[in-house]
Length: 120
Image (cartoon, rainbow, N blue to C red; front, side):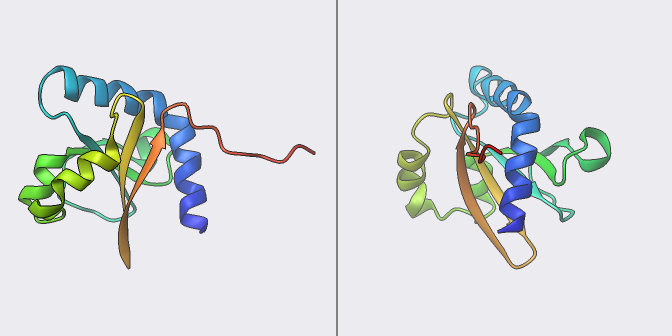
């Protein structure tokens, strides 16, 4: 759970940058389905776009896309239609592949995401 809280804090900090990058990926016809990879691990996936020492984030961030994830076997070809349906609108929300040492999961967050915070 703590990992997700850190991811949310990072997202609040860099969501505008991620949205700009996603728009470029789509408008330059690289992919209709950009995927951001968030991890504390050193990985060879996509292109690094942010790191703790550069941007003050907790995690490293890479930009990838659906087609690369299929080619590398992260998403099974038989699940591509389901993935696209779940993603729905890449202009409205970010797809984050959150890779931790023991697991990985896809998280979809709207770019205008603001977490609920109790007022004091």
